[in-house]
Length: 187
Image (tube, rainbow, N blue to C red; front, side, top):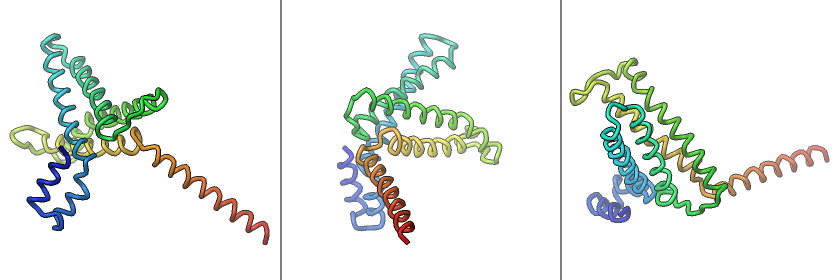
């Protein structure tokens, strides 16, 4: 799916054009699948909320919390398996991935709850399509999508090779410091 979209966009804009080069850098398989499953996660949230609110009329907050939790669980597994392709189900690794994923989603959930009000108070208070505060809500939504992607990529589903490279860099820095100290002592 991702490659078909890229091919279509290259046909429209050309691969060697300025826009084609941007598409090549930004619209990777990972980004396209992240956005696709992000839309699916939103659908899970809305559909589960619609079902729950019918089962429990008037219980908006608990239904919203339950639908958010279902959506985050769906997002965890789709991000793990399809976006970042973390195929291991070793208990220790899954626990680390899950705990960091949930922590980041709770953080961005809090940001999504409180940032629109702050932006509206800061002056981003005009209505859009007749909806008060919609520009602030949209701006925060974009920020949250980017932050969730970065947290998932750099923290929750970080590849072992990246971790190994970081350990190697740390080992090299330590070795360099030791060599400098040894050289200084010899003088």
